[in-house]
Image 1 (tube, one colour):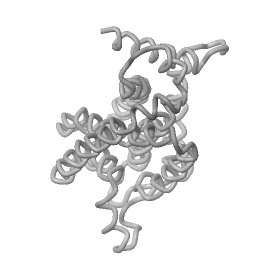
Image 2 (image 1 turned 120 degrees about the vertical axis):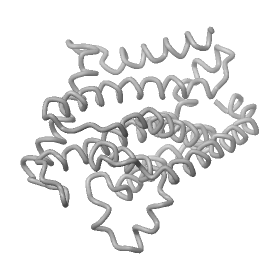
Image 3 (image 1 turned 45 degrees about the vertical axis):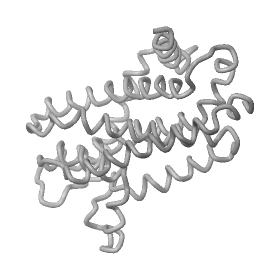
Length: 256
């Protein structure tokens, strides 16, 4: 229970520190998602005049991009912030006896709150524009759970190694940059060469984001076989990350 209270307090403090000193304070947690959505919708859907092949809806491409970018932001931010969590919170680790992986949970919770706020405004936009929503939405919680579970496993492994290799934080940042452009978020999969399309099946972010795009844009059930395989691989990743962490835990505590 004490660890739960600590996680909740860290989450609360994360929001307060993020907007500390600003006049509007935590209201920025709502303002930024609105601004981002307006950019996605206006820039991609209206100014650029982009359209999805086979769709006559003027907002279809904006929704396609929004679904991908909202998801990617939560996914990438979780991994990036988890990578340096043991170093960032070493003052807490040295004072309180707690399970180090628990620290990653407050980042996941914080990013999930931001995600829910943003996706909430996204749903409002869909309702205002009378965009059709189908029964496939029931899969939405599972996909998000899988997304953040993978980010947790990746983040725990990176956090354990970053203590000893500080440059890994920057390396992860570079990986995320390449990963973003290797994932169909602001472009359509169909424009890629066949050889690249075959490689995309090994991209976890592609499986997750295309699942959202299937639900919101194409109104079809995502590739459940791919999601189930990714679910198995995600749990294997977490087991491996915990194994590495347990082997290094004593050195991690000594080193920081």
